[in-house]
Image (cartoon, rainbow, N blue to C red; front, side, top):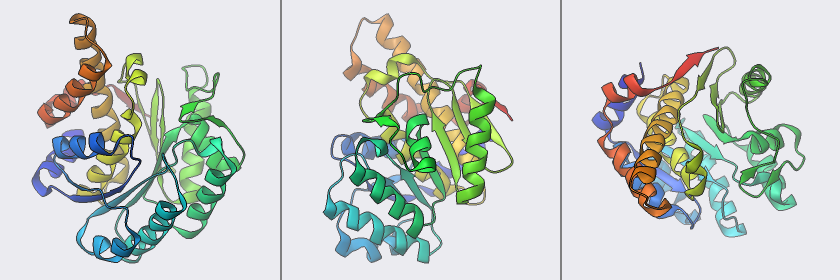
Length: 274
C-alpha cells in the first residue's frame, strides 16, 4: 500500500506550489525533488490563479508570516479549492501570537483543506482557538505517548470529521487520521528535532504525495510520515556513527528520501491501524 503511494509520485512527478517560510524554502524544494515531485516556491498573490491552473497541489506553511504572504495564502487556497485540487495546511507556531490564531481561524472558515499537519499544540490550538504553542515546538508536557495514544487518536479522528481533512499529528509517535481510521506511525529519531525544517519538509512531500494519490489522501499521508521518519532515523544513526553534526544529518535525510524505494518504504515503515 505505501509502496503504491511512492511509486505514483515517481510516475507522475506532480508540480506543487509551496507558500512556505523563508527559513526552510530551499530544503522544502530539494526534498520535494528528491521525493519525485516538482516544486514551485511562489508566494506572489498576482500569480495565484495561474499557479492553481498548472500545479497539482498547494502547500500552505505559516512559519514566517506577514500580511503579504497571508493574502497570497488565502487567494491561492480559494483558487485551488475552485479547481478541486488538494490544499494542505501546516499551521506552524499557530499558538504563538494572536495574529497567527486569527489568520488560522480565517483559513479554517474560508478554505477547504485536504490535509492539516501539525504537532499536538498546533492541532489543539486550531481546535480550541486558544494559545497552545511555544513557537514551532510542542508545549512541554504535550506529546503523544503510549499512555495517551488513544486520546490523541480520537482527537485526530474527530477533528478530521469536523474539517473534512486528513489530520496528521506529529511527534515522537505520529498519527494520520480520517474520521474512521488512523495510522499510528513509530518511525523517527529524537535527533530530528535538531534539524530545522523537518516538519516543513514533511508538509512539502505530503502535498506531493496527496497530489499523486488524490483518491487515497489518508494512505498518502501515512506514506509521507513513515518515509520522513524512516529516512530521518537512518540519517540520525549515520550522524552518530560518523560523529557528524546536524547539517550533515539534514543532507543525509534528503539523500535518503531520494534513494528510498517503494519496497524499502513498505519494509521499513513501522505502523499500525486504529
